[in-house]
Length: 121
Image (tube, rainbow, N blue to C red):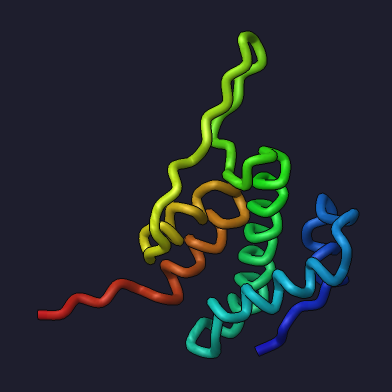
């Protein structure tokens, strides 16, 4: 498996250009735990990039909320903020967390191809 670098990441996602390379490398390292050699060879590196981007974006969104929670909606007139409900970490929570960013959604689409559901009869 070819593990991407911060340079590869920032070429794919220039919107993260101001994020320190060390933070990007850490997100890549964490994302590698969710992608392995059982994935299609052509999907491995891209899946790592999308998942790392998702992880960084969620961190940014939580930092911007000043509460550590991800904001799911926001209104300016008469100020209103709604946070995503926090749940115990489960596989379904991980999957629903991936739906909070476009990067996570793309990773999840790739995961469905590479980790198909198995029916036990």
